[in-house]
Amino acid sequence: MRISVIGCGYLGAVHAAAMAELGHEVVGIDVDPGKIAALTRGEAPFFEPGLPELLQSHVATGRLRFSTDMAEAAGSTVHFIAVGTPQVRGGTAADLTFVDSAIDSLLPYTNPGDVIAGKSTVPVGTATRLAEKMGDSGAVIAWNPEFLREGWAVKDSLTPDRLVFGLPPEPADAATADAALREAYAPVLALDTPLIVTDFATAELVKVSANAFLATKISFINAMAEIAEVTGADVVQLAEAIGHDDRIGKRFLGAGVGFGGGCLPKDIRAFTARAEELGRGESVMFLKEVDAINLRRRQRVVDHVVDALEGEPHDKVVAVLGLAFKPHSDDVRDSPALDVAVRLKGLGADVRVTDPAAIENARARHPQLDYRESFEDTVRDAEVVVLVTEWDEYRHLDPSEVLPLVARPNIVDARNSFDPAQWRAAGWTYRGLGRR
Ligand code: UGA
Image (cartoon, rainbow, N blue to C red):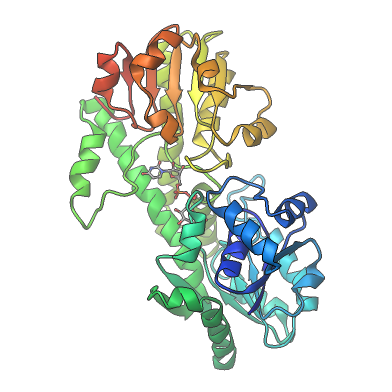
């Protein structure tokens, strides 16, 4: 099948490569010439395990191409829209400028019967609005939300845990979109991947409600961490104990500095804004609390550091381990780690930061921080070490090997990744979040 993917960011570049891996002939299109040049060389413009290998093999065979020219989309049967929907400046709603301009510039190159499949996360009602905008072009729109996680994006794209097709109301259009999407995903469906075929609104809502649920689960356990902090309970043991109940489950009960990234934070805010527009703000009012709990955890980490410095952070050397919003990613969008580093810098601390993958992205946003390539350079002479992004290389640190490097043995474990007993036994003052 000939497929185009419009937007080659964290979502689109992986989707294009995955579609080529599934056997299709794919062109990825993006307005950013630098990104397209890198992809054309078979290089991933961002850190995503497994992506460079896929790109190299399919760019080499010519099955996967990249271009800045929308005319290259002509001749494809399915056009996936994978552009970003960031938070609007000065508000909480989603900015749909990129989605609208992708459709506007794509339409002249579509043929009647082509299927435009939206993958971007959008407010409910967007597909219906776009269908009206497409008028009598003869192309059909469907919504096919994406659930991939950064860091696991290749695996999530090739073996997703479910597929959702949101089809148009007219039966003939629905049949066209359904057939095209089934053909595009044939190898995935052959693996018995669950498929939910539904309407536009449900498909759009599946995506935002999934992210809202995940965010709520994290903020739930972080709220328990706040209670644990005033009662002497231990939130890690609490999470383990409630997680044994299958109805609750252990995953996404990791208490710590909270969630960040380009998806969860902006998606819950955009959902709230859309619900308010629909006159149902009260239905998702709790998401404002989810957001507030999440942001409070960042300040809690800063407070721990200030405590460790006896209230005097000025000019004190603080080592921050991690900048990406989570391990296995170089993404610093709404990163709790970067936020914590910037807040500490704002208090006058001599903040030294490092990350295995995200230094360049962080530097572009916050050039004022002191970036160090090596772990040793970062922690040397530190009065406090803060673990904020739980990369494996930090999780497996040996506290007795780090001890001789630092000025004072203070560790703040903002991801509850360490064994407090092991660090204390090695002579450190350990502070976790919601832990004894
Ligand atoms: C999230 C969803 O998990 C994907 O299903 C979805 O497709 C994606 O958003 C999207 O909308 O595109 P992602 O942003 O890559 O994926 O990251 P997650 O793995 O969900 O982690 C989000 C944040 O939650 C990270 O900052 C992570 O550190 C934090 N987190 C996660 C916790 O604080 N505690 C946990 O127990 C788990």
